[in-house]
Image 1 (tube, one colour):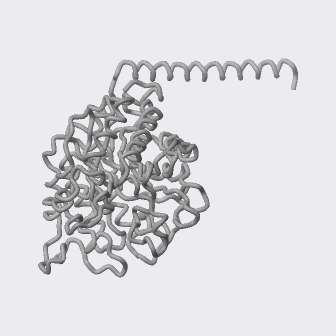
Image 2 (cartoon, helix red, strand yellow; image 1 turned 90 degrees about the vertical axis):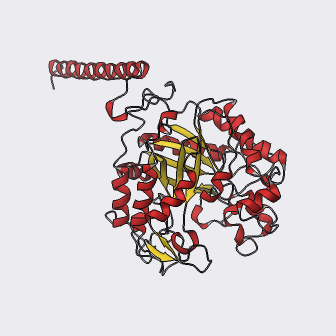
Image 3 (tube, one colour; image 1 turned 180 degrees about the vertical axis):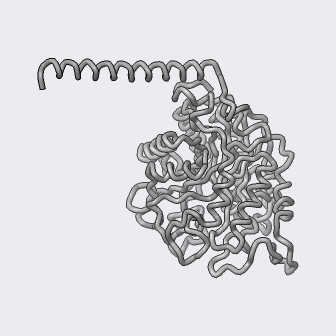
Length: 439
């Protein structure tokens, strides 16, 4: 090639680069101006702040949970070989977004150590940061929820297995018996608020995933029902109503704006939500988890026999009930008129439960009718053991099938609902323009 040809090609290359750079700079300038001006595209009308995603009586966030737990030396087979697992990769979140979700509820280990001295765990922090980066790349929002933390480990969610597949000594539930440990949980949330208050995709903090002080307290004849529990333990360390306001204060000391989600004791079950003490705090969202009827329908082992809708004994009193959309509507009415936004950030049923697609559809429609945000349990990572898939709706309804069937009837219901999503970080005024964007 002659020197003249090389020079001509170089000039053309420089021109193309200059044009591309100019276009990129113009796009960045336009995006910055739009973010500064507060212009809202028509498809995200009414959403100018993170709080707008929750308030106003309109469902704006529809998505799924992911679960991760610490590795306790192989006790939790789902975790795998990593310090925390199962391991999620970018493709997992891209697939969730492609299915229509705009929101990931992170059911995640707390970022402080579970045993003293209570301090940030860099491995857990790094994992959480990595998840948020992938969720942001998939153009979805996130809620951070801590399952564990000072004085609470993952075994509390399987506490009935103590003495069988793990030892009683491995069960850490000190958070319900030691005020200093509860204060350390507050320090964990202060640290989290400082770390994530400017992250544009973090639109909520779930203070504790499924508080269970009632399950830890010695049963005095009524601890499994709200009336009996609060009769015996109101005002004690077992009472979540005494602990959660201090966590709210810890967050608000550093982050006045990010919405805070809080459910009731009793594993955040709907029956316990009316007993959650109301406090005067900025941007508070009440939540509950919906797995009802639990023992008789949503968590049936295979072969499942109770179908939805159907007639069966829900509460073991020997009297059958008609369980259908009307029954669900009556249950959800317990969360009406609470004076604050409500979210159902966990719900679902085993994929082989007869009628599960209709159960999910009816649940979603009733939730949407009330304008609540919601997240199904759960979205599995590709690394998740394929036979641990009771809630992997991509696997369809056959309990003996453990591979994806993307076009199955359950996923069709979920996709149809998620198709209603109209706002994402790329269109929300508070998140356009990057991590420094104003709230």
